[in-house]
Image 1 (spheres, one colour):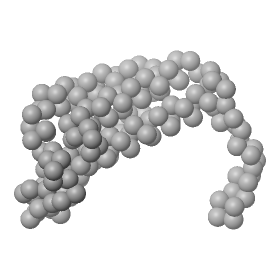
Image 2: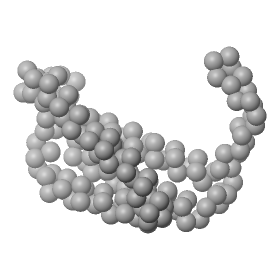
Image 3: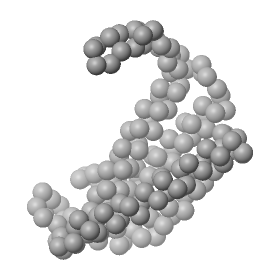
Image 4: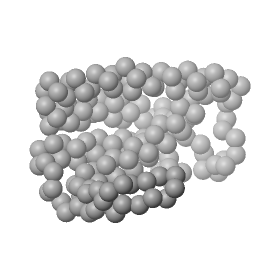
Length: 163
């Protein structure tokens, strides 16, 4: 993120998150067993235990790993963006309000996503999720000058951001 800057990070990681849905669409269309999987052997570490060997689908493992990686990068960029919107004097209040507002989709829309997926089918749902991500990326493109203005000057990285 430091090398890319705020706007490029948001755009690149947002595109990667959109692309991760292509993997879920592929799984929904192709089904289980397209890629070779592995078996996790049984173990007991005292604090966690797997009673029996468990097969893991290779395609699902690959898609979930990519989605987690891209989601983590996107979340880091988004948190940095929200932090850059806050003034030092009001950081706690402003960040709390921004993060609460950002969670509206996860809290209110997320549970309804399962109902939508059941009604239109999983492949169509993942295509719809990709289509719905495009306006956010277009808005980010449109606001690129404003977002770039929030980025920390490379000479000041590691220091305090301006108010």
